[in-house]
Image (cartoon, rainbow, N blue to C red; front, side, top):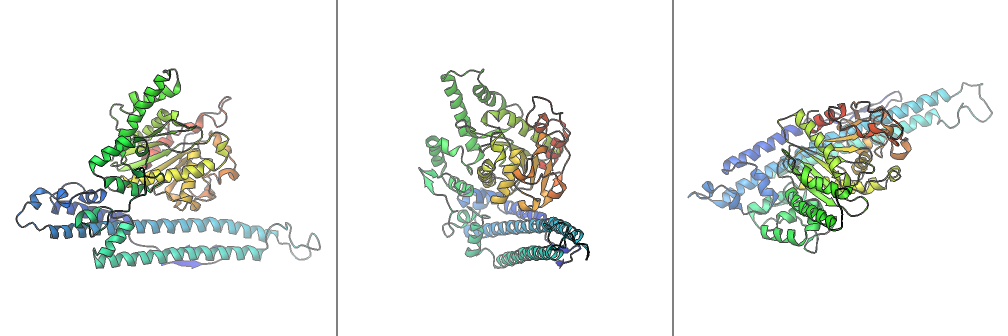
Length: 550
């Protein structure tokens, strides 16, 4: 039960708490996925197969069932539809529970931070009031006229308390309404209206159409331009469009529109990898024709990527994007398959990282993957090196322009990863190094960024004064800056409060001190890039986090 009590010496701020557990709900959904497989004579996740692309019902039902004399397809369709509906509704409820818990914790942390500031202002106001007869002048009763009156300070605290209390109560009311809606859905069952609502919310895509036929519509598709989705299309819609094509249509488009498809969020990983590897071959051939040799950095980086790193022994790597044009370009490489891995992380780089840094950044991503593998060998991991936005130069890093454009690019990329998942939901982490953390902070505030954990190392600030500004609990935001990292000297007015300060409210973890700054290391020193060093404290912590061990 909620409890809110105002007191100028310290308030009680306890929003309503739900006893529902999202983890148990997800386990329940997984159990029904297995049950669906058993009754239909299939192994694997049949629900995801029904839901991910266009299929004929009989193609996904085991032949030993559909071939029986008593087989009644309409009954099997209804049974499978009912189970798919139950799975999707349970997933929707699990997400609602998790979202409310995050909002509740964020509201608590936001008030705790506000309360500290108000109490400090009240303390100063009390200390600033002068006793009668000791006024420093005829027009004031204060030592410092710029500090507010005590009554004003208390009033400001009360108003802020009431506003934040109302936000917490509103979140609870919305959660209660959502619970009622989901309860009603479960009581009513897989009616046409309820199924359509789940489709609109993204919990059911192709499944209703595949199982029940034309009485249910296909997923909403993007606007096409030249036979493919226009730039900026919703990755979920892009994926639904692609999966709805026949195999021959897909092959035709791969031949006709490779450059648009290979960089498009929502296109499956294997397709992007195939098209980008072909583009890599073309780029190497072009540079060779133009007289480039291994003495030239661009040529060397591309040949190393193709000949050494993409197919390195005992690795499974995917080239998800490559663009060598422009000042920065793009280079996106996944170490491990993000469509199937239990744990998926994205590494967002900072200042000065352009496409020719592809192999170095892949090295950092691989170090994170190795650390995650070492943390838990029973799970599968994928870490993506994402040079996917216009990273700033040294001067641009003082501004927010790159963070604003990068935030949109990052949001779309992460949405694309979710859209193309062929397994259940992954444990996801987004790691921001240096200005990359600023991009993540901007994305959280501008668009929201769905992940289980957010990591900021060597951060100049994340465009926020307190972790609650990001809209996620401090327990999900992990921060660290090495003692000898020159980024420590960044003033708060550039990109917000240093996220490693206690007043920011995030979860701080230990990094090694790092190399001492030496002449020639300007501007930030060697320590700024040492968070991914083998056997470092920071790398081990991040590996544990990616693997779901923290």
